Length: 158
Image 1 (cartoon, rainbow, N blue to C red):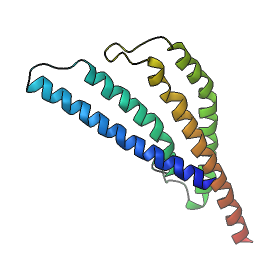
Image 2 (cartoon, rainbow, N blue to C red; image 1 turned 60 degrees about the vertical axis):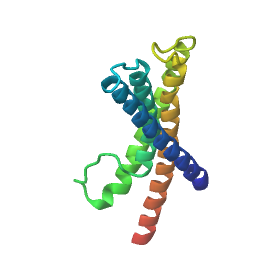
Image 3 (spheres, helix red, strand yellow; image 1 turned 30 degrees about the vertical axis):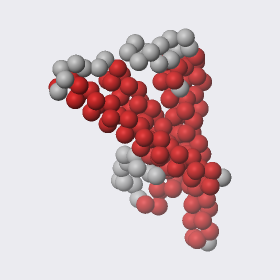
Image 4 (cartoon, rainbow, N blue to C red; image 1 turned 90 degrees about the vertical axis):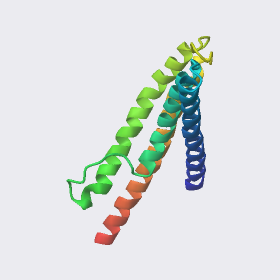
């Protein structure tokens, strides 16, 4: 299971890097054409925004997996496995609860296109269920790791 999650992690990492590169290129094109040629493109802003949305939503799971999210360390270190467990369970609940509505939100967009680049909107809105799915997947891994850590801690106390 860990190997599969590591592969997914690597894929998401590469895709997010490509998305950042895409944002950089489209923004650079917009700046050059607007200020050098005085002929701005209308599609670059929309494409950069859409790439940014995809990037944020697919990397949320990686942030959770690598424990890079914002946190507070006011409680004792001995409570950390329990707090991480509670956090991961809450994230799973959140992701599962929103997954169905995100699919319906995506379904509403079928047949519609974005104004500037004429991309089907369901492609943009698909970022939400994909991101929620990745988030839930990495949160399940976190629950498993935290349960194992709590079991090991209890064995070490005995």
